[in-house]
Length: 369
Image (cartoon, rainbow, N blue to C red; front, side, top):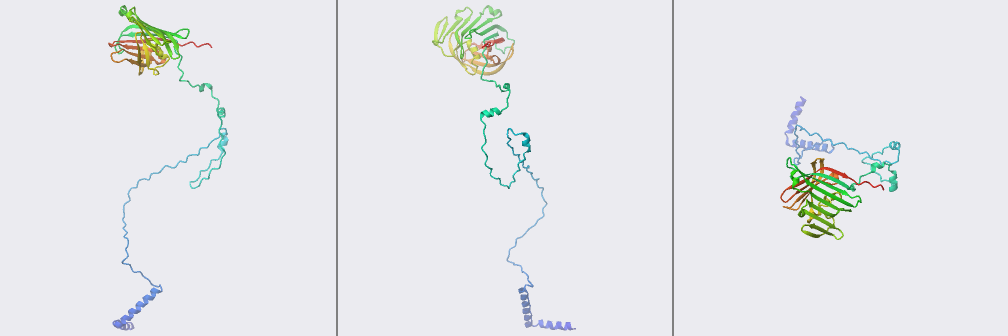
């Protein structure tokens, strides 16, 4: 009953405008006091302040590539300088030096005493003795002593070697020898036809005589004689003192200047024993009728088939030009460049070839001094 009467009175008071103003003022005062003494506070949102919008999404994870593992860092061991004469036991007992950490600063090295350098004599004394045979090194610059005797026999063909079943037209024998005095040489070549051809083809004789000097063979006299035909007989005399070459034939005598190293048709083929090919490929050569300067070209190394077996050779070629005689030589590599195959092609294209069938060589007898 009391409560209802009080509520009626309060309601009537609130309807009064002056009373409502008083109640509002009291309420505002109470809130102000609470705010000032910190018992009650609240914040109102600032509508003018901008806020970032955070957006979150759920995504399925993609397959990530497997990480590439870098190879572990290899720490190379520190090589220690071992004293030459230090015992092995002392070397193994020495503790290993600790490795410096990456952050540790290395201390400057202490001053060391200057290194002692051994003299060449002391170094040689420290080298252990080795057998003398193991220290022998062949001297490639030393060439073998030239033969003092060479006897060669050939089959003679009148066709090229590519002609099947070619027949032997003749035979030839060439003998080179150094005379007993050791200062002179002599070469004799005889070519003879076989069969019916021998009835109308005479023998071909060539000789060369001369001396040996520091550059090899030095001819003194050369003879080319084709049977008894005077028009096929020529000779050459080498006068080295007057430096004159005297050529003799049925047509008369001719004198020419004689150059150092001039050879004849026989001597130049055995000159390769003294001056190997590729060292001098330009030679002055006489056939007793004329003197010419001939250039030889190296055609390569070839293996030729002979009655002696396969022979390794140097192939040389001399060509005087179109329409001129062409000469080819095959020099045996295992026989001091002695000729084992000779081929001539004349102006008409006719081919004459000599192919070795046997070869005998002798070296000088060592002196007993």
